[in-house]
Length: 313
Image (tube, rainbow, N blue to C red; front, side, top):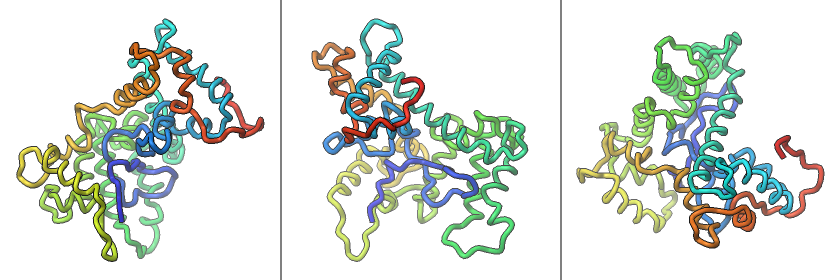
């Protein structure tokens, strides 16, 4: 069974009353897309990075001409200095805003489920009671999940996000709890959770076998895929920086939250490179619309007039 952990999307909850299950590990920052970036197959990653995940779903159902019309409106909003061009910086800002919007909507989607007394705050007691009520109130459950361990991990993360230590989260603190990978003061808990999930022998490090085992587990004599050889080389040359055969906390942090890599910057450079027909380092409206398939284009060509349209369009 192959598990590509570097493209896992992290969700603490996406519905109320369900504790975090296995694979609540956080890798890298909040992802720009749930898809892998592979333009040879499709532009799904680019669509979600540029539009945001929810808006991309709407565009996926639009006919080509409607996609182009809406894209033209977006271009006007992206052009911050109103010079008639879209720069790499303006692309980056737009992508980061789409990312922030996804995080904001994720928090808003769940807020009312946990703010039981409607005081505009969420206490640890409220979160625990909603999330683990079935486990706390009912008889012991026969399940593969260790709910006691899961609740303890959630409490540890909640305490890390709770900057004033009152075990009551405002919107900012609850956002840090749900999306710790985007907050500097949460990096330690991100690393802790990652290492706890991968460090099978409990020695406080991630060795090569644990690193590979988290990505691939052979079943029924299944042969290893070829890409594992590249991962072993990555481990030796880039992950294990001090060459002691294992990753410590600092090396794990560099792996999952690399300080020198920004996904929004990389995506902005990619979109610019793919769309800049005259190679002048900036995009015109025509250059973007000509590559609407890269930015917003849908595989659907005729969805019909019944599609609900957002007010901004």
